[in-house]
Image (cartoon, rainbow, N blue to C red; front, side, top):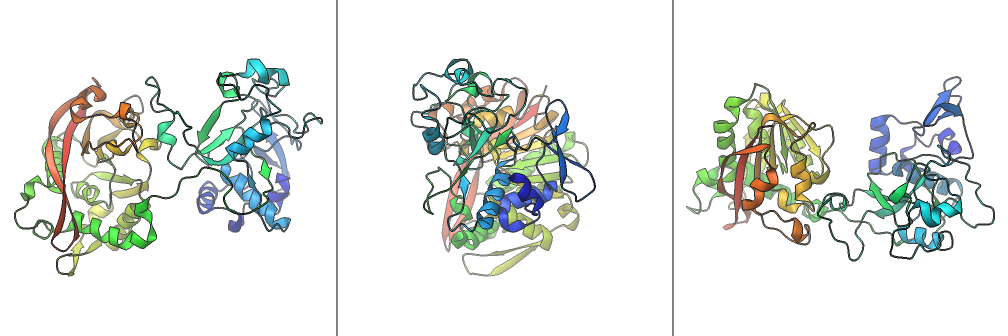
Length: 478
């Protein structure tokens, strides 16, 4: 079935793919599934199959290994070919439970039943029973085959917590960083799954572009609309109706002159965060860094501090979870100037930017809870008001050190935060107050300086919102 999708040009036709899926496909230049090996003349659509130990003739009755993007594109293609008014989709978690009720006796029990209990008695292809996938024909006496084993099954659901969920203190960042609406669920286990991964209770999560010995099962829905899966929606700051207002407020707060931002003598300019942080870095960090050092700012917003670092000669990457913030940063970088509006008088103003500094800037949209693995060995890392927004703050702090830590030995970390925690985003047991930060940082880091400053925003004429920030600068010793 999947071969027909490949042969019909499904990988070349954007209409079958989500926006994110198409970006992945074009970036990787994918033309067929990862484990398919082209043989024969170019364009002949002849393939062999790469297994764990060898390349074999194509096993057409084995399940295809595909990621979530590929699975959704195939479902869209097949729906069009069959002229379906209600398009096909993938399973939901609830539907997987419904399918397996008769397949795995005891699945409703609260105790963990692993591969060596009820599942092993079903002669499933798990725990390396065959060392590879197997034909999907299965047991003809059953209505649904391979509900467990063979390959994992992608679900429509985003990874989410179940009622009664609690973070385990010995592994506090296993689940919580992935409750972000960017991780798809997989269930059922694969031929290589063993132990708790082959449990009837196993539910795992991966980004939709990952390959995990995973396939998919299509559902023919009776109706359109809500399919019962749990999916997160985009954050409020990316809502189009508020986009321009938010953009202008952030640009003014970041790039305006001190006398424009501050109402009368509300705060001394030298206590503004946008002045304190560059001065702190110039005093303690720059004298000890080689020229053209690498810097990462996590929580860069519209990029003002990132730009200031670039004017100091640092190659700087600004990272933020907000698409709006990253798009705004890229726009002013391309234009070479920042346009903003003074909320007091409506005057449109322009700041011209340093052309050489702009060449040292890069921008990435990324979640602070799951920064790319290839980010490591920076000379300076700034965690800018992100720590208290994370479901697992220790998870981010743990990324700072180690063999592939974000910060290289001898490098620096600047942490800024209000330490205004909320159980809506972070379980109370994981909160880190500012006086607990030295313990959380561990012995690999030495504190250089700490203090407090202020962040000011101007939501309207004669209005100001002032927030107090705590900051601390650290040096990685080992």
